[in-house]
Image (cartoon, rainbow, N blue to C red; front, top):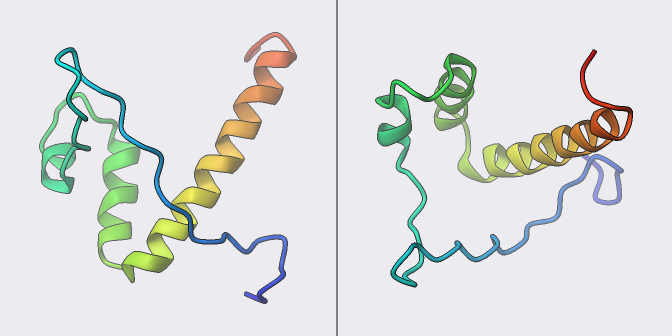
Length: 84
């Protein structure tokens, strides 16, 4: 990707994790924890397996871009009254 491409995701610091009930920062789940959790969707597990096989910087940047696109889609769909 070109440095000033609209598809370029600039590295950023991750947001701070929310505190748990005791005021301590909550640790994100481990990849193995997600892959072994029966409540996690097959789609997310497939994406995670794919990402773990890639360069971690590229995978993280792509994940940030995907999250931004999906968040915007969510905003638009909800503004239109939700999924029909």
